[in-house]
Length: 480
Image (cartoon, rainbow, N blue to C red; front, side, top):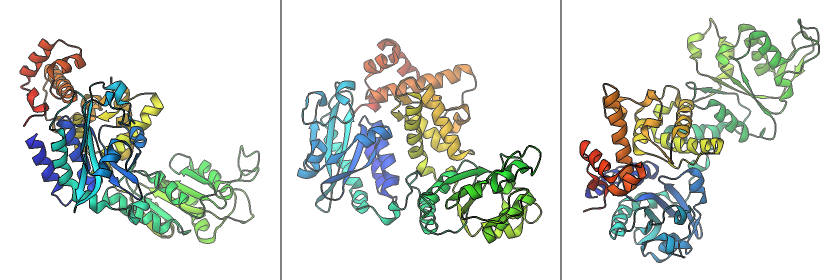
């Protein structure tokens, strides 16, 4: 445990923000046997704000509602005195938001105040699933002292955090810059060009721009310019008159007319044909159009948000009109690739776990350390979309309530991520077995007998596996 505290001190003493400190600190506590650690901070009035929780799904985190003076956590903040519950199943004061009494009969709970300049600014708490350890309070108090300054600096919600749209996830610096730009341009009718690699969430940003604009009550329509043939796309956008071409048996109202007073999102704008580019330029300049096969000028009132993953500048002027480019590029917003916002990877993964739980009726609750390490070391060429697909696969493969490293796709199973270089089936199976043994020991705080029951093997076989792989079960216990 002394090594854990030294690592916590190293992380907490850095110049990182609270968001960047909390993840590693709570993960280190979990690896030492203090699981489901949570940090709460004093908010307005008697409200306690949940800053972070480790090893819980987003749905579980939403159930954690605290007030000063209520429950164990609320009393710790009110009195400034730490509390230890040796067995939550037999403690009536314990508010069981997570159903721990039924699932973990021997679980204990410890909670300590977080103090800064003599004032209680929050509380740090954690469970131990395999009984009570007398020194848990002392260890949590040390950690609370190390992170107290970060908690105090958090204060009340800032104007910066209020800018974050409800449909976007991320606290990294690149995403905060995107939120600021959205807040600046959303209230105006200005045309916006979203730039970024495929899978970075351009459609979600377009939706956020619409939702924060005066047109929020109007329709929002997406058109993928790369998915439709030239003739079909032109008819979709501008409409056509009866008899305009073969098969035009009746008049069709185009998207620009139908979305009057709303927003049209043109995805993959770089794939427009030259003829369609000319017509779009007229809509941008004059706010008018003519249906295909028609001669009547129609005025339209739409806001256009365009997006592309292509290098439009390199396409000028051969395949993309310069005048249209300058009309579109009035207010560009570049979306960062996922590899540029690694601080958001675990946050996004937790969100997708909850989405997949609802979609597939699963009960996955956390990502194992091995899985987190692999997610953080991968380069994510497919960005957020690829991360979502990887998490969905892992949730479907998970046997229990934990996503392990081997549940992730083969593309993430690299030597750099796993710290191994298996040269054949035998070596690969050994890596898999070692990972299972280590995760079982983590979940049972180094109790070999309990870990054997988790894996469904005898205690003797478990001991042989621990010896074979040179694993120190003692390192998972609360010692020192």
